[in-house]
Structures are given as C-alpha cells and as structure tokens.
Image 1: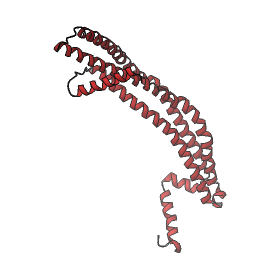
Image 2: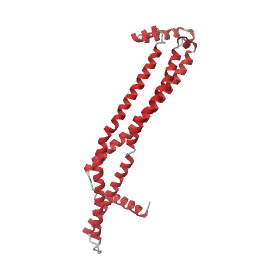
Image 3: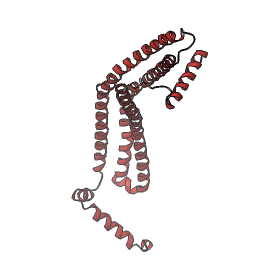
Image 4: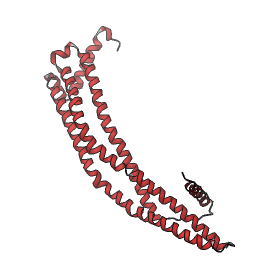
Length: 261
C-alpha cells in the first residue's frame, strides 16, 4: 500500500469514529440502502445454492457408494441361499450399474448445466462487493470534506484560501461519490432481476437430471423384484408382509438358543 493510500485509510477510520461520536454528520441514502440489502439477500442465497448444488452431487455419489457396500454385505450374508434365487446377486449388479453408468453419465451434464452456471453467477460477487466498498469509501471522503467545510464556515481560518480549497475538494468528493452511488443504484436492481432468467435453465436441468436418476434407479430396482418369490411379492402388494415378518420372528423365538430374546 502506498503512503497516500495509507493516509486515506487512516482518515476514513477517523471519520467513522467521529461519526459514532456525532462530530461528523453521516449522509444517508435510504433508496440505495434498500437495493444493497436486496443484493446481500440474493448474494447469500446464491452462495448457499452453489454450496447445496455441489452437496447434491456429492450426496448422490455417497448414496450409490453406500448402496454398493450394502449390496456386497447382503450378498455375503445370503451366501449360497442368495445364489440359488439370484436375488442378492441381481441387487448387487443393479446398484453397481447405477453407480458405474447412471451416476457417471449424469456427472458431466450436471456440472455443465447446473454447477458451472451457478459458479459463474457467484463469481461476479467479488467485483460487485469491491464496487460497493469503493462507494462506501467515497462516501466517507465526502462526509469528511463536508465536515471540514462546515468547520471552516463556523470558525474561519486565518488563511482565507482554506475554505474555497476545501469547498472545491468537497465538490470533487461529492461527484466521485454520486457517480459510484448512481451506478450501483441503477445496476444492482438489474443484476437482481437477471438472476431468474439466468438460473431458470439450470433449474430445469436440475429437475431433468433428478428425474432421470430416479427413473433409472426405479427401473434397475424393478428388475431385481422379479427375483423375489411370488409369495413375497403378493404379500407386499396386499400389505401382509409385516405379518410374514412377524411369523418368521416368532419362529426364531421358538428356537431354544433364541428363546430369551
């Protein structure tokens, strides 16, 4: 940081302290403040959307990985019994295909149509925030010069050139502030309004990708169902599966080694 920049930062910090103590009057622009609050709300929502969108893809991977571990465990649990009817092996194959084909096929489109557009939108925020920061600095400079002019008017200095010089500096500070303020006041609402048409295609892509994943997952699991015995399928359809489970549990309880359970 240059010496001039350091001096400006010190002066701005001093002005902020003097504002808190009431020695410098603060310029308030209610209309601009409303637009900045709207922008901050959108910024927070967009950053959260970016985080959750990435989390969704990670969750899909984690879910299919968990399904594969469950399938491997079930296959080992069934052993030869599962080999006879093929149910455990077919389930294992179904979740392996879901992970190897469906998730990998959706990864690229999801990144291109959902993650990357959201990330590009959020990438504008640092520049906007820098512009807001610069506007706030210019406002502090303007308020500081206004206070200086007011002080010289109320208590004239022996050097009569100080007041007109301070007035010129105050006018320059005002113009610099108003230029940035007007730019932000005009463009922040435009940026906020553009969020919907920009993100609409990504939202549509998200829905289609979710639909495809759910449809393919359902299709693969439906293929496993054919390996279940007919009685089990009928009991499930008629809502009698709970009774069947209870019957098996009772048979387990009747075993002498499990009689205390």
